Amino acid sequence: MVRRFPKESAVGRWPVSTRVLLALELLKAELNCSDEQISSWLRTDFALMYACGIEEVQADVHQGHFVLPEVLCQFRSRLDEASKA
Image: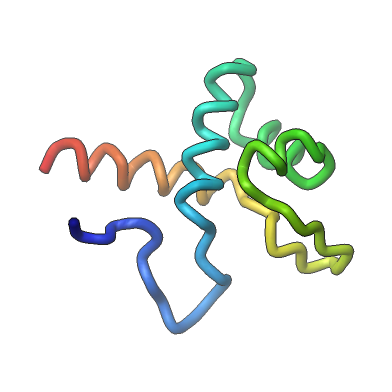
């Protein structure tokens, strides 16, 4: 199977795990919230982190588990592309 997510890049942030993105999409639908809300909750809600498979929390300002709302939008568009192929 071709690996489509995440696309590798030599620049920018580390890619976000597909498991995290998929879990956020499912939880966002279940909780009926926006991309901004679910992204914000991921930074502070340990139950949400656990559901996404995040086992370690970084106290650093540059938190590795932080997901921007734009990343969720790009993930959805890639899912749409993959489903049309």
